[in-house]
Image (cartoon, rainbow, N blue to C red; front, top):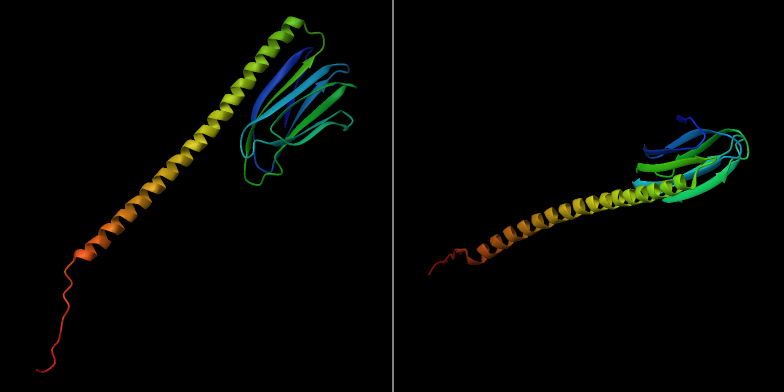
Length: 182
């Protein structure tokens, strides 16, 4: 578990590996009235989906989504305390995931800061999409390579088989005839 320490206005961006059949939780100390945004996206693994859950200091569930690839949730803290958000891959028995999340807390931010943060968020989104696309392309490339090797082996075996078959048509087969008494 990881404890993120909070200030007046800040953001935490983390990319982490979420093993199969596992759950990872993060904790944030938040002051009442603070506006918070949780954004997440699965970068690699399986069907690119995880479960996400956000709980208040009293254990009340503020946000819960199942098998989502990406999402964003904004809320205002109703009370002081430690808020908990968890990512779960417990439904997957053999595929680990790489998850990126961005947790932002605002109290009195300037509009310029918000605009710059928006630009940074767009850049991050496009970088993640590029990483996801690259991962899919590399996976497809390896599948094509294995398929090509398989086809080459099959072609070689069939060619050798045809050579022996054609050779057998033209080989001199001597048949022995035995004459019985003349």
